[in-house]
Image (cartoon, helix red, strand yellow):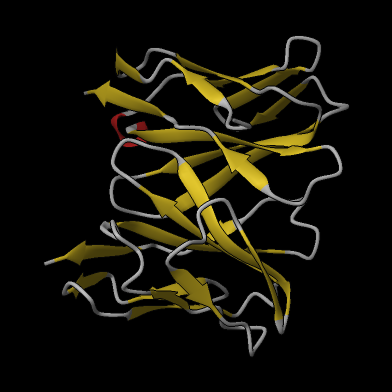
Length: 111
Length: 113
C-alpha cells in the first residue's frame, strides 16, 4: 500500500502541553501536507512542506521533514482544547498526481 | 466567499437505490476529487477529475460513477452495485497540479437503511 502511516493513532494531553504526531511514507515525494479534521467535518489544510525543505512554521505549528528517513512530524505547541481533532498527513509521490492520505492521529486536549 | 459546497449533509439510501451527492466549488479550481472515509480511517480516493469532461478512477471506483460537465460541479452517484455504501463522503478541489494542497467540502454522511 502507498498509504502513509501515522503515529500515534491517538493522543491525549493536557491543555498547555505540546503535541507531537509522526508520519511515515514509502516512496519519494514532491511534498507532504498536514490537514486537520474536526469530528464530522471536512479536512482543513494546515501546512505544506516541499521535499527540499526541512522545517516549516505556521503559528503554533511546526513541521519537519526528513526525506532520508521518509518521515515527517507535526508539533503543536501550547495546545488548547480547541485543537482537539484528527490530524492527517498526506503526500504526493514524485511524478504522481494523486495525494495519498494517512489514517490520522486523533488528538484530545483536556481543558 | 469562495469555497466548496457539498449537499446534502445527511443522506439515507434504501437497498437497490442510486443516490447522487452534489459538490460545487467557486474557487475556479481545475481539479476535483471524491474521497470515502470510514470510521477511524483515512481517506480513500474514489474518482478524480483534472479538467472538465475528463475524469479518472481512483482506488475504489467500483459501484460509483461521476460526471464533470462543468468546471464548478463534480457530482458523485453511488449506485446499487456499491455493496457497502455507508460512509462519510468528502469532495475536494485544487489547482491544476494539486501541488498546493486541497480545499475540502464539509462532507455528506450516507447511510443505507
